[in-house]
Image (tube, rainbow, N blue to C red; front, side):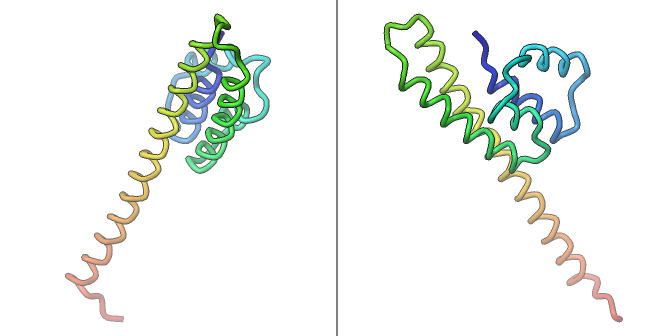
Amino acid sequence: MSCHEIEALRLGLMNVFGVGDESAREHAEKELEGHLDGPIEGLANAATLAELQRHLDAALVDLEEEVASMDADDPAYDYTRGRLLEVRNAERAVKRLHDQGASIVDGLGEAHDTLHETFPVEE
């Protein structure tokens, strides 16, 4: 069993932030081989935080349906529920990244306005 959602999210974050070494990318791609469809593919190929959020939400819906359809006696049940919790945690982390980025953009706008107020430019 593997947590494809988290590995695909790692790939997507590598894309968005332009970070990560090639060996980490190759390892993630190998682990996802044969599973790159639907939200997993969307996560792995995302180029923006908004795309990550959208595909992560879809992956959560799929995972919630998978857990709901499982028998509690299934040996994979606890692991699958654990995956669900971790993907929910990841969703909150991506939201925090988005909110922090928006805050930085707003702060730069305020800094720009303050500079113009302090040092007016006459045209």
